[in-house]
Structures are given as structure tokens and as C-alpha cells.
Image (cartoon, rainbow, N blue to C red; front, side, top):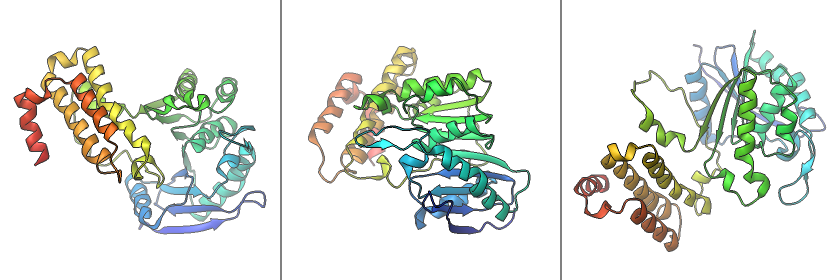
Length: 331
């Protein structure tokens, strides 16, 4: 492997579109992954991009500084609050294919390129849509893709993707949004997954609940020789911000796990371990969420956790196994 170098350039793609910012970390490989984000990487985040390039043996390109609601939306639609989505994705896709990809890959001297796309929210929607319009990407990752977008799944039903592999993820609470359009995201994501699978595509879908339940259903475990999964946290993501009410959404996760374990008969066999997992997660919600990420703790949320613990794990205060583990955890 050659020495990884870091490049940061600004490329003007068209007079119609403002300058597109590219953060590029190179690797001696014919594989390249384009990640479309709302904001360019900070200096502190560039090391992450280099690690990705090294671990995945691929060239990594972060594309940012787009007009998010114009360049990534496939057709016009009403805005979520005011105005409208401009629906200029086809124009951006044409420039992407004819200009941006060509310039980047020729400058990196990549032959027989194996190209991948990763997007979040509207850029996740764009990635799946673009794979149905042009044969550009071997694989597409869509993190919390905006498949609620007006008419998208109906349009996709009449088109076929040229990509072969897909990764999709969705947060547990995204379907519970107050906006009825956004609240349809789970149902619409399920439709996208079904259509891709019907086309014989390799699809991996992950929701926020998945990570917590993996250990419960695993029959065996092995140590991996390297890191094969990386999750990029946007500087504006909920988890990296203080005083954000959405942080309280974590409180629901322990209850979901407890309910799932009881429904599947796991709780009856492994009660001590499930109870401990539940209590330790709720302790984390108290210590790190309610007290650690808010300047002024919300007493109502602390009482909410108290009431949920009493409901889901009423024996927690008088069971030796849990009390001993709590002491160890606190110390």
C-alpha cells in the first residue's frame, strides 16, 4: 500500500451550481467511495477519512457544499416547512457523471474503477435514485434515506437499479415524527427494500435497535482481524449536540429490548442478564444523557426513567445480582 496523502480541493462543477467541496483521502486501489454530506469535514475529522481509506483499501471522497434541497431532490415537491424542494437532481447527476467523477478518478489515475456511493438523508435518497438513472455505482449506502419524498417509491416501482449491493439504515424513532410526511419513512423504506430484493439485489438493512439485539441472537462470536464497519457522525448529529431534546429518545431503547426478550421467551431463561442489561442502559441514560448532555437536567425525564424501571424491572432494588453489578459499574 502506498503512502496515504490528503488533498482538499474546491471544484467548480457548473455555473448553475455553486462550488463543490471535495475532501479526498487516497489509497493505492481501484476502489473509490463518494460520501455526500451536508457540510465539509472539519480539520479534526480528516484523520477519520484517512483511517477509512486505509482500513477499506479504497479512495475516499467526501462531497459537500451542495445546495442540499436543490441538487439532491429528483423532482419538485413542497418543502417540509415553507417553500419547495427544487428537484434539480438530474442536473447534478449529469455533472457528477460527466465532470466530477471523471476529474477525480483521472487525477488519481484509477483504471477499471469500482465505485461506491454513500449518502445520508436526502443524499441517501439521491444515491438510490441515481442508481436507477445511471450505471455508475457498484454499491450504494443510504443512511436514514429520505424515502418519504413525495412519489419516490411509486417512481421506483417502475425503474430498476444498476447497483448490486445496498446498505440501508434507519433510526428507531424516525417513524414517530410529528410531520406526517416524515413519519412515513419506515413504511417507504420497507417498500424500497422489498423492491431491491425483488430485483435480486444484495441488501443489508440496519436500524438503531439492531446493535443492541445482536448479542441476544448470536450463537457464536469470533474476533475480526480488522475494522469492517465505520459510522460517520455528522458534527450536527443529535448525539454530538448538547441540550437537544431528541437525546431523550434513547430512554425508550431499554424498554424495547426488555419487551422483545419477554415476547421471545429469552427473559425467562436469562432473567439476570437481561435485567442487568436493562438497568445498566437506564443508568447510562441517567448519567450520560440526562445529567451529562444537558446544562439543566429535566426532572420530568428522570422521573420517566424511574417509572419505566419500576414498570419493566420491579425487582431491581432487592436483587443481589443486580445490586452487586451496580456497585461494580459505579466504581
